[in-house]
Image 1 (cartoon, rainbow, N blue to C red):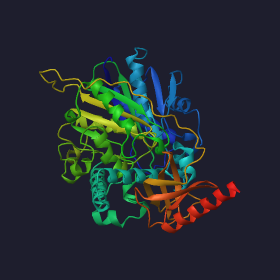
Image 2: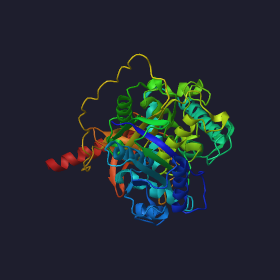
Image 3: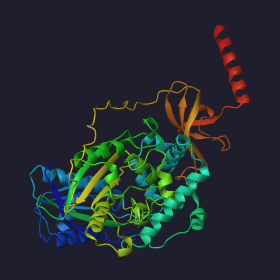
Image 4: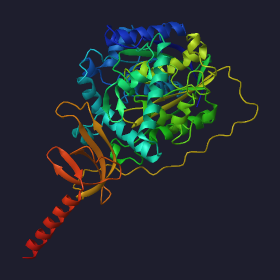
Amino acid sequence: MPSIYITGVGMTPFGKRREPLGALIARAARQALRDAKLETVDALFVGVMNPEEFVGTGNTASVIADRLGLAGVPAIRVETASSTGAAVLHTGCAAIASGFYRRVLLVAGEKMTHLTTARVPRILAEMLDREERACGARMPALAAMITERYIREHRISLSHIQRIMAQVAIKNHYNGSLNPLAQFRQPITEAEYYASKLVSVPLRLYDCAPITDGAAAVVLTGEVTDIRIAGIGQSTDLLPLRLRSSLAAFRATRLAARRAYEMAGIHPEEIGFAEVHDAFTPFEIIATEDLGFFEPGKGGRAVEKGVTALDGPLPINPSGGLKARGHPVGATGLAQVVEVVYQMRGQVEPRRQVRSPALALAHSVGGLGTNNFVTILERADRARPLIAVRSPERLQPERPPHRPRPIQGVAPEGVIETFTIVHVPPEGFTPPLPLAIVRDARGEMVIARGEGLRYLKIGRRVFIERREGGFWFFPATVFEMARRRVQQLFRGRGRRG
């Protein structure tokens, strides 16, 4: 791929902003154009996830071009759910690499805080599989199920994973406290973390990224500047969580990372720092493993040892991450890149400056891990090794996963693969709401609501029933199994008669 460079960046403060969406994006864009010493560009790419529902505005690319005084410049909107900002960057890279454009302006933003706390999750839930959200699953519930499966597969106790998640939250809030653009500018204590309410077991409020307004902008060019795009990678996965090859990791991140490392000709251990998509604190742990920084199951230990701290060997989310900097969904992926540029240029507060800023990675997740991006950036003056770097293994063609198909019916018995208890369910559902992904006797995977709480455990046998509104599961007690056998016996006699 031809060399692609960053010549200008800009970003607004994140949080609850009074400005409308167009003004936020224009503010970041003008900063980036000033930084690049440009008045115009060859093309404009605009990233917004859902302005139609968030602010009631469509045709956003034309709106932003008009707002910036760029009428006449080609403008295109890009959207890949919560990785939209990263998708805009990758689209811009393709435009420059093709030779079609010399300079492009990339902008991304979202305006969310003016809506009610109940409405925003409903809009975000539109990223999810219809069947999974029909039973009351929203993003925190599915993230909690992934967390439960992760701790099961890696044999981590519940108390231990809670300590790890607390440390991630504390670390990122500390980093955010040093970032003048962050939404949350105050550190938190362990006591404050544990005092926050349960959202969906084991996730607490301090494990979840906030609702945020904000915008970011980048100007790309084919001309040499101080920051180069070294590698990019993208991959997708199945929309339904229950049908994926893993319930404890993100295949799309792993494939995107391999593609980015291969393009850059580097290995994960060469990365100096990273901005990763910590929409939920356990997702930071899983991401650092999927990106190859740590072995599966070891990411939490790295946090406990201070490896990912601001002054550690591999700082993760020096900006505060989605957790503390904030998460305006359409802007986040591009904001990560802007943060990396600030770090590489030494334009951050001294207490927040990482020690090895020459080579960095930005990782963005679309939806619940269904459209993920990895971007590797390097400072142009980075000293190259004297010996050739062994290129990562070539990607082998992978067989696509099985195509999702409508569930016609399930066997009456199954086993819990993962679960959660939702304490803040969507409208129409009563807390606490038990949810589980259940594998039936034929291997069919369904998501179901439960009856009762005490029997929830991965590997527990349950009965499954289809009722109005979806599937339900309940414990396979000795009494219930005997009752069902008697029913089957009588039904069999009736058919013989």
